[in-house]
Amino acid sequence: MREVEYARQLRKPEGITGLNIALRMNKLNALMYAHCFRLFPQKAIELLEIGPGNAIEAATLLKERPEITYTGIDHAPDMVAAGNQQLDKFGKRASYVLGNAEGLPFPDAQYDVLLSINTLYFVVEPESVLKEWARVLKPGGMMCIGLRSKESMENLGLHQHGFCLFEPDYVNCMLKYAGMLVEQTTEINEPEREVNGQAKPMHSFICSGLKAD
Image (cartoon, rainbow, N blue to C red):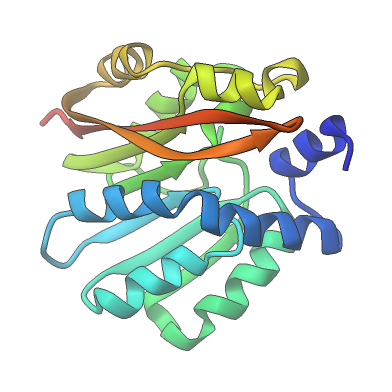
């Protein structure tokens, strides 16, 4: 697949190609999800995930944590359809809606935790978006943002196709601007990826913060 088409599908997966890419992302993002899940409070929480793709990770979490109520939102209709197939078995504990992460269709202070894995690359004004995400968190609520490092994204060549790239310090600054108290930054060494016949190092990070009271 051409690099430009791969980038387009990452931004908004659709059709058979998009479904296959989502399955690939499940494997590539597994470490990031595992780290985030360990940060979640060990109690009943209402969780909102931005851009959960096919929601396989969400289904795994809900099976392991029956006290969690989950909402996912994505702008890709094919992902919402695929994700609802995964989540139907959880009944009222899970919902997945079509919508825009830059203007969330949820009331203020509804969620205990907001999770975003590899979605922030695609927004035009990330500072404003994080303020919008913080809006729907309860006071003291947690925001977890997982991204690949700037170097890793450059190794993949995706920076040439409209992706915004980030480092942890900048994400933490945006969290503070959004009214969050920065709590923890976790850096993750991932397996190398082959890019154009060469093994390239891959790194990701998780930034988390708590909404100020």
